[in-house]
Image (cartoon, rainbow, N blue to C red):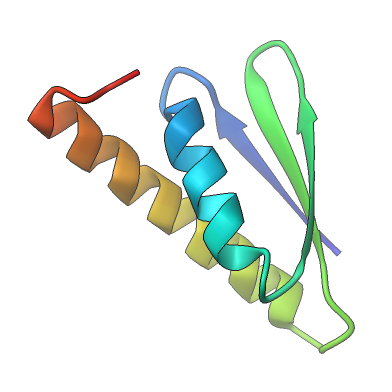
Length: 75
């Protein structure tokens, strides 16, 4: 299992939700909300997959956040 902590000041909630929707097909993703972070717990029966999905999901959510802020679609 891997844990991914995404700081709310850096990541848009909509970008996190979109990334979860995309990567949920590849691993089991559980979301928890804390004061400053969205905490994702990622599990997979396949060795190494949870860590890879965590890295890819974080990068994808960050890319979506950057794109939304550049276009003025930040929420």
